[in-house]
Length: 349
Image (cartoon, rainbow, N blue to C red; front, side, top):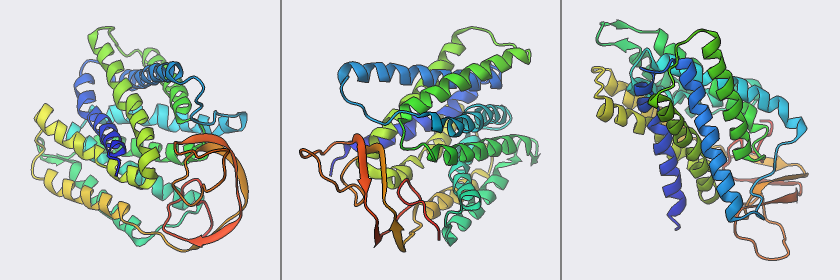
């Protein structure tokens, strides 16, 4: 078995996981709204550098289908919810609570993504999803406890939770353009979101000094939000979305451990039940087995794919092993296999 995709997804999870504790250090010197913008501008810079390097290395290799005019409403909603509102709420919340608590609360993004998909997009939800929601809610209650004051701190966790809800909306909107070029989507989101948030910080009169911490914020954004995505996309090609998602769920726990080591944060006894409940929620989400007979209607579309799954068995002029992009047809068929609500499994239940 090729171990390279596994290395890619673990690097991606690590880069994203360390962002809350490192941002916790930066938010002391940079206003939260401005920091949110700088992180996304950094992601834009990092992905732009990667795109230029990729174009030089293989200019003839179009890796994904580019955005079209009809995709813009979905992109606008994703930028507003996931690129502007979510990171601002996250940085404001991070300014109120520990990096450890913020890292564990990142697990709520997957829960909100699933619940929004069930409620608004009529996807199926099993018992494990609702059990995972109960575990993560209980973990969140523990994380609202401020051991230093001996009281509940609701503002910080609520802001982080709102950020996760907005990213859940973002994920569901982006799902409708998920066959498009993810690098292009994230670059647009990074540039627009970054400019809007930094401008908003100035309009609100927030004092942002152009010093070395600004460079660190851009650097953190380029790696944790930008290059992390590149490694995740590379992992998707070898692992598939389900397995890659499971391994990427390590990111919040990497962040929690980093907070303990780097920031030496100790939030009291509540950290132990919060960690266990979070881990239980992730396990319940990742082990849900959705299996039933389903029909694929005939469709012709263009997106990045390879031939290692049952939905992309079609002929080429020659044998093609790597992921590639071209217009292809899916004939109508009915079959049974475990599946998730990905691009090819958006059906009624």
